[in-house]
View 1 (cartoon, rainbow, N blue to C red):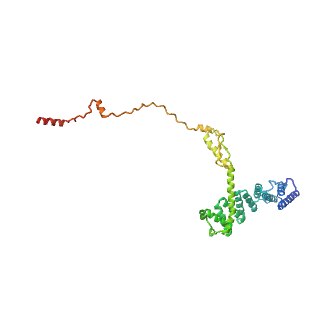
View 2: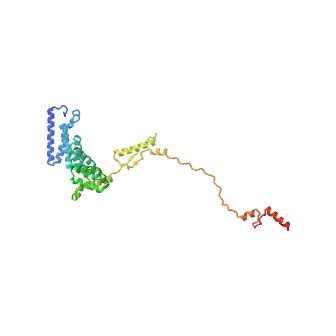
Length: 348
């Protein structure tokens, strides 16, 4: 079944040998001999018992096979060995390999969250704890740790929902009561408008337990903020290069090239502030082709005659030029007045 051409007897021998070596590795783990345990488990992964034939299994039969179950147990224990030796990357890899074939193992999901917290990967830790609660909504270690993580990440709405769930199970859960009171102090508007079940909003923690219960959530928040600051200071944005543009329609192709840079930055989780290098692109062709034409220089106009200020002549000067004295002359008499004077003289 596992080795091409092997008989049933050979298969049983191979199976028995694999289980014997596995039990020996468990003895090393029990005695805290981590190096020997790690070596034995890694050698066991190469055992011929696990040379599966793709045509042998179908659907759920694969995960119910004793060999697959043994392989899953090997990854779980190897992950635990790596965790004990602070090799968290390999521990996560082994745990994730184990849950890929057994998604109902709540202990392995919880172990993943513990390792993720040590690596300050709170997003993975939250996802693992949610998987625990999907398996068992009353798994208190997951409820307790997830409340602390959601508070540390500032996800107060999700945190209040989980607090409400925990208080519906146990109204005396001190951790939930303390975090609830802390959120009410930090964001009273959110707390007031949250849809609490009857009676849960008025529950108060004991004063003596508040400081002690809030130490761990605040410690998680501080580590998360330090890790983010450190990653931002160490992270340097790479230089993105703009490709050559199509000469047929360079303006439209420029838009496509910019979209390609955006997609690349999203796929590689890069910052949108990455500098862009245009030196390898033929962007100057586009700039030359679509550069606005400069207005023609103005034509030279004829020189305007010089304007000489003209003085307004005085009334006396005008009269002198016309031959008229500037002295006052008697007013000119009209015909009626003249006729009247003549008539008066004749009478006299």
